[in-house]
Image 1 (cartoon, rainbow, N blue to C red):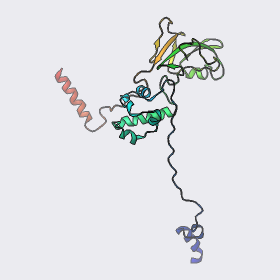
Image 2 (image 1 turned 90 degrees about the vertical axis):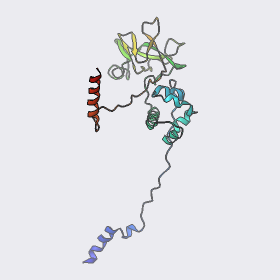
Image 3 (image 1 turned 120 degrees about the vertical axis):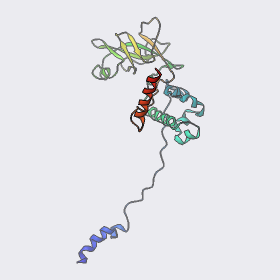
Image 4 (image 1 turned 45 degrees about the horizontal axis):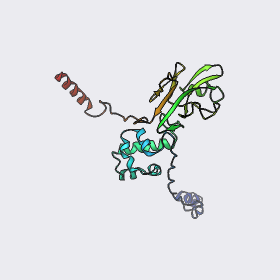
Length: 241
């Protein structure tokens, strides 16, 4: 009776021959791979500009990061040691660093021709082709407008000293975050029209809080006692009126 149950008992207890010399090797945790350091872009060439763009008063910590590499290699413990407070500011910096590392920029992040923090935009006509047709990219980007058969207008970034794009028209891509209104006028956030061009040319400069994400707010009535506080505030306002 027990002769037939012994192998099953060994398997259950883990004492059989197959368990004496385990074929696997112990898992040794590997060292944490350091986060990659992205390259600066023409629109974001240094740390002060990055902090100015993301807003929320982050520019006050610009002097705490001597180099671009140190800024993107510091973790939350380093930021706490440097005096970056409160904790939500540290989380905000870390979140934006990760977004920038993954190529997620705000408006102006795709600009390539920037001089002293200012980029020049212009409407140009380009031929419609595969990857740049209304059924694909033109529908996804609001920076384009149809002109005629086989042609379209898009907003591109040009150098101040060159009236035409330096990239061939067949490979040029529209700038995101801006639109063409009435077929000849550039519109969008932080767009400043160049005088005498009737809106066909514009400038975009680095400004405080261009990429700022608004902080969440607690709506009254969703925590204990808040409904009573709202009622009391209304009663006080009515009494003082």
